[in-house]
Image (cartoon, rainbow, N blue to C red):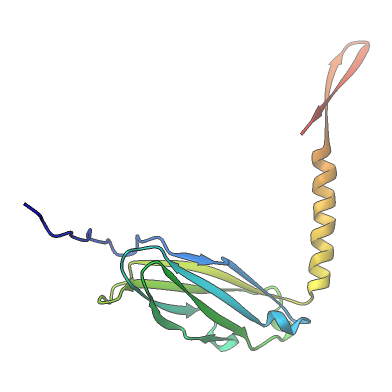
Length: 159
C-alpha cells in the first residue's frame, strides 16, 4: 500500500537559515561598499518566504525586504547604507532574516547578520596587515625553557 509522502512538522524557530555573507562591512571613504548583497539560500524541498528586519532601519535601504525563495534556489537581497556620517563609525547594527513556509505566518527560522561602518578601507587593511604580522611572529617559534640548577637548556618547537 502506497502512502502519500508527508512533510515533517516543522518546529517554530528551529529551521537553519543559510545566508552569505554573515557580516557586512561598509567603508565611509569607499562608495562602492555602500551597496552590498546578501544571498539567502533555500536548500529545502519547499518554498520559503522571507522578511528582512533591521535594528536601525533609518540608516539602510533594503531592496526587496520581503519575498519568496523557490525550493533549492537562492535570492540576492541588496542593502544600501544611506547614512555614512562619522558618528556611526564602529557602531554594530544587525539585520535579521526571518523565514517561514510559503503558506504559513509563523517564523520557522532566523539568522542575524551584523553590519558595521568603518571610516576607511585603507586604515582597516593596514590594521589587519599589522595584526597578521604580529600573529605570524607570535606563532612562528615557541621556546620551551627548562631550568636545572647550574644549567639552562632550550628546545625549539615549531607550529
